[in-house]
Image 1 (tube, rainbow, N blue to C red):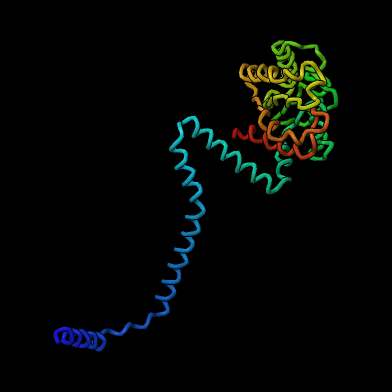
Image 2: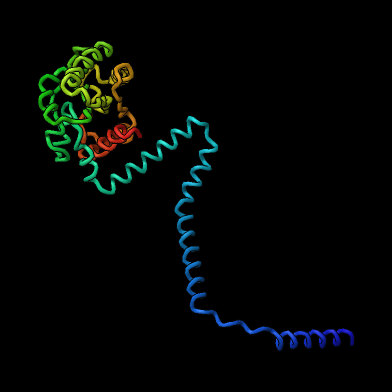
Length: 268
């Protein structure tokens, strides 16, 4: 009986609440519009939050690294974004060299051979050495470039005239001075010599020691105030883009090399 009485009381209370509950007022059009705007902003914030989440996760990752590793990680991220942006519009890679000249040997010839750059922006000849700078300087100076990228070594080492890397750097400095005398405001970038690979290693007794020359070139750049461009990583990552001779490059490697030079120009 007690259970039945309790049930009756509950039913009566529910009926009273239903009878006296305040009916909801009709929502005005302005209120609906405001609520809709709020929802849209919330959705948009959700999209933005999703967009920055990767960055937030990356910052969390950096907290676990020591300062040196964190700086490198940030630099790697900047380079990756820079590369992605350029690769979205390949033409922007080559237009970025409008105030620059690349000077070098047959490896540089590929820039104009594949029609990436005009010959006036890729001053080069097959078999050229840095000691040939007097033959190039008028063509370089005529472009009045802000940046001069140098890419020599293959023939310089192969000829056997400079078996000592330190002696070679002295010749290099003397020839860079020819450029500085004509273009005192130009910034000098020195590419490390891409290594020979595979069969190319046997093309000269000096080719297995290209790394020694690059070490000397890097030290030279630090002394003289030139910018050294280390190409070892992109060479290792893209060995499949070498020609069969193990010395020269296929077309696809040139945009990779160009972007790497631009990264150094941008200080990335």
